[in-house]
Amino acid sequence: MKTVIRAAGLIIGASAAVVPKDDCCFQLTASGDAKGTIGQLGDGQNRIGGGYPPATYCINNGGITDKNGRGCILTPPTTQFQCDVGATPTYGFSIGMGGQVEYKGSKQFYACPATDNGEYNLYTTPAPGQAKCVKVTLSTGGQCTSGGAPKPSVPAEMPKPKNTQPAQPPKPSGTKPSPSEGGCPTALTGAYQTPHLIVPVSSKQPDTAYGTQYNATISPEKCTIFNFDIPSSYSGKKCSAVFLFPEQSQLQTSAYTFSGSGELVFSELSKPADQKTTFNNVPSKKGDLASIAIKPGNSYTVSSGSCAAGTTQSIEVCSAKGLSLEFFEDYNPSPLGLYITSC
Image (tube, rainbow, N blue to C red; front, top):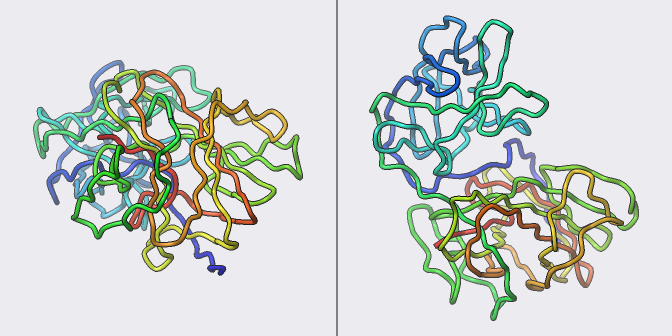
């Protein structure tokens, strides 16, 4: 069987861990090492400083839009927070008690200089190549509080699962599937983590470093490595690595090509991959996690274990017995790809 890939246009990113209040609107003020109200350029870039009029935003189901109806996104790969015409919002935002904006449970944002005159763009991570980024928090002034989103977590160790049979297929939106035996839910209904680096390696081009990609490619010649960064605050929880593989008809913004009847082979690496990782210098394996004969319309628990703090986990996914799969990792309905769920 082989499916036909559709166009995919959204970034890899985090999804909503909880559902904040719907259609609640607010303005933003930055505090910290850069201060001031948040305004906008005509193209939707959100700015501190510069004397721009305060911008108005609305939050709905974890996604933010501005008063012009533009979806507010975290642009890849820099994570700049801006609002674009026709864009689907990046999900995962919430407003905690007291009015502080959170993204995936974190209140930390970064302001990086956009001009030499005290104007700053906003990011969720420091902008690459900019040494003058500073930490800030964003407040609605007490508007639209929802209690905040639970923090996602990832596992410290990934033992071999007892059972690699398919879990229940993804449930419709609004339901919460039960955890698989010994693990966390195989659905993005609670706290979870997305990969922050997706790096393919090829046996046919063993010295080529492809760098981070939006698409994962797994075939007899190619493996793909997924990095999950673990904040130091994540500890004391159980986490599962899960692979979500819906039917093509369930996808809204993503797509995949799939052929063959083999297996995906998941392994934990001894240290993280990076942008320079090639087939010839892939870190050694720490352990095998699972071999799974995937079928569309299913979700799978790859491994379960205790959540860790302050580390980066790397999972390599390879092909066995002729399977080929290329997909665009995406949290939008229905989620597709490799994630970590926490419970």
